[in-house]
Image (cartoon, rainbow over all chains, first blue to last red; front, side, top):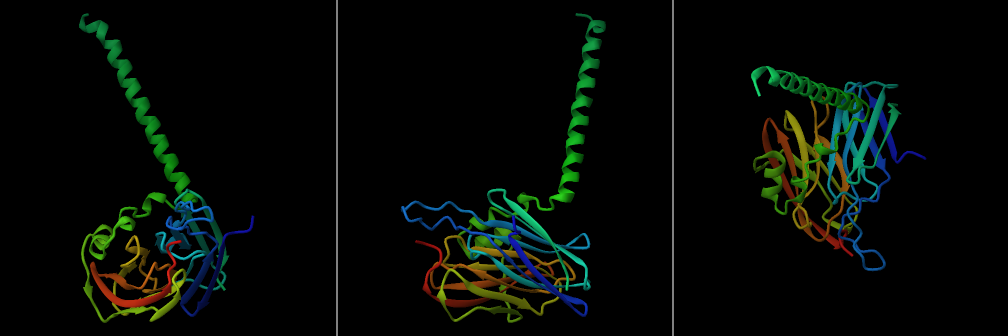
Length: 103
Length: 164
């Protein structure tokens, strides 16, 4: 299965800018389906970005984060060719992770 | 029963105890080993903070304190969001020693929308997209040097993104 995570990390000098897009419904638990039944909450809770064995960024998300969530941040100390690991887990215990090369 | 006949029982109990201890230790070690591969502990999600329905309660649950307004917190959000399902919101600050950033949407069913942990070496700047049920004040919270600083902006929502 294709990864749910798309990540682009670009190093410029000492700073690496990371943009990631995760494919996920992020159901809030307040929306009804076509039959008028509430769709139960189903959303990512934690996303971690790791570089060289160190967590450089953690996102804690509630149901108010948009569908197919996007996040952008920057960190220092990485260089082109380094690995950046991204992993997430949701409220149903589903998870995914990927490793991207910093460009 | 005399003391002698009781002795083997005690010994057995001691053996049992140490066996249980060993098993617990092995389980513990196993847990540590697996966590090295599956990095995320789902319990690290602050469930209680995400259930709160006011700014003060959410901040108290998440950081254990309240914040003060600061012009050093920069909240970038649209004046008018046509689609409440996708509202781009960015938070940045020039404050030193930032350890966390959180975004609250006061009129949403649950106040806290997202929280970010910023370790040393990571810039105090985050952009992401949130859902907004209706027109609401959005509060950006920055945790720096053990204190909380906030910035507030009202975002008008034409079509809500949280309900049916």
